[in-house]
Length: 119
Image 1: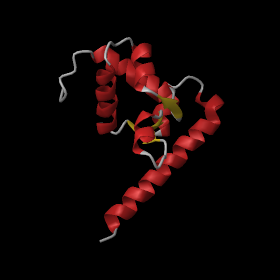
Image 2: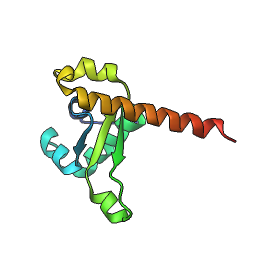
Image 3: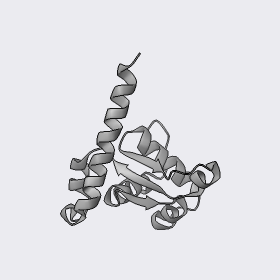
């Protein structure tokens, strides 16, 4: 409602796809083809909306060059492993990726906790 999304079904499919492919690299152009939208900017906005809702997080690949950070694929992590278990197909087969997701969220929580507790 806040972002006046007209393609509601597309953002739902995108959310399910990203949660099913947690801890994997994504590109906006590949997501555009999978979801069937015409514009990469729409996909970028939709992924941003899902991040704003704290459903997913994106992690850019480290590089000292800004250009390669922008152009490289990003990894997507889910905020909660319970969501992954309810949405993803056979989450137990992806135990390594599930553990990677749990470690990422744990590190993210420690960083945000230490950021807000130091003065």
